[in-house]
Image 1 (cartoon, rainbow, N blue to C red):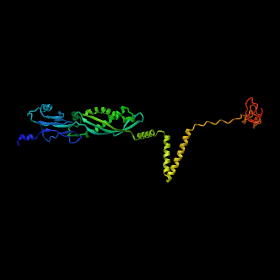
Image 2: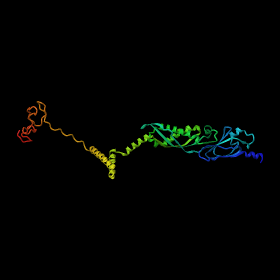
Image 3: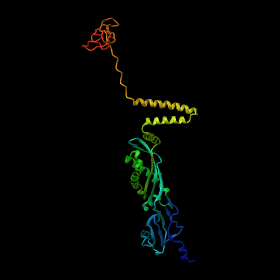
Length: 350
């Protein structure tokens, strides 16, 4: 083997990368101590971008396609190297493949409850969770701001930052939308779109963007949910009086079906008493109010001593004062009409 063959063996003539996993965002091509030959073949697949870095300085960026590395398609690298040994001379550079596909089914959730002011419940705390997807939209910015010179960079490196940005953006979206807590479930899509537009400008300085943002659930505190369940139950029951009567009747039926148990007898007696009270109350509500009884006829008072007199009395039982007999039958003491010749009670001539 000649010297030229040995030198050619130390040069790379094919550069490509296939992603074996699903979470790799950046892969640094393994040079293995070799140098890239001028005229080598570079293959960049769809959902990839290749970045050449020369001595720490970003050089050329290649979009998906197949390239033969020549001075015509390596303008920056050619300028940096100023080739003195011809087009076949090898050069040394770092090659990074950046994954630009969507990273799907990433889960997010609120670590701590989000405080919000609700028009119906006042101050409440909300928890939410869902999924999102994101991608690298600016590989150069992503290289400068995020992964730097790392030989391998995965989703775990940016997931924490994205999740915190998501929760912050969602909190702002819920507060600014002023949607009541009971209506949040009907506005998940609107909130998702609103949060998507609010979050993407915050991720742009990192070279990233959200491709989708989905809210699966927004839950209220347990105390509020119990209150809502009770309110819903009352609405379903409708007339509580009829429901109570139904429950009492069911209790009596259950007690009748279990005559042998002492507890059943006691329950049946209690249910019967409750049922009787309910029926009594129901009948009292349905019956019209009775008219008050007419007061008994009064005989007046004695003009001498003021003692109450019975109707038709001729003398006061207290002082013996004779009473006026006008309008009164002397025989039976019944009241007579003015001008009457006979008493309508006893027939005595007046």
